[in-house]
Image (tube, rainbow over all chains, first blue to last red; front, side, top):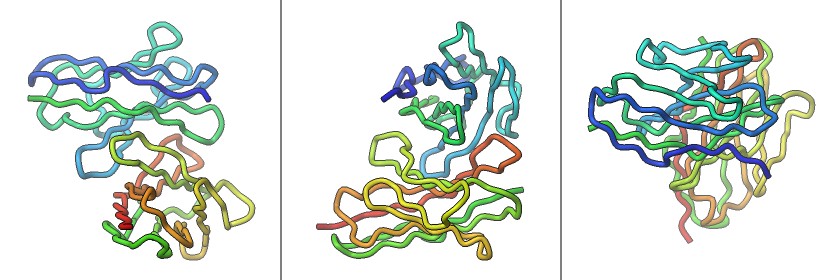
Length: 111
Length: 113
């Protein structure tokens, strides 16, 4: 069964550094998402992406965040200058019908 | 703004006990409703979903949920839990007019043998 994959599984970075989280959505899916889950809290929507542009973003998704689909298969989330509060599990998801399929997540730790 | 409430934050049960986890949402329009499960150290997996039709939906691993529109509820049930059901359970709603999922805070279920 096709799956959403994410790399790396765990990323440790220093505050102020840039990080890029990578996702490979399911191949025939058209809609892509990033969510995050701070430890002990609920899963929060960050951004949705369709037809090579952002279709919706949350208040969390400020100018430090960007998304890209550089080559038709990868879907990336970039955080330009990480802060301590960016430490979280980041989930990628993709959708073709009404169901979003989630990847295993990348645990980002900002020191 | 839409929101999802899960009233049970931590539930502890013995094997074979019955389970009901509450979920209420605040939105009056057409919604799609979901329950996701997150086993320790794993990613979110879909348990079941409701889009339309029969308000009693059956999912994987013996779970079911009932959509009660008048109560804005979508409670998850299982008649007899197993130790392997130990996990975090998230209710989510998708506003038909937007594209995002709004999650509840989750319920941590611990099942003891």
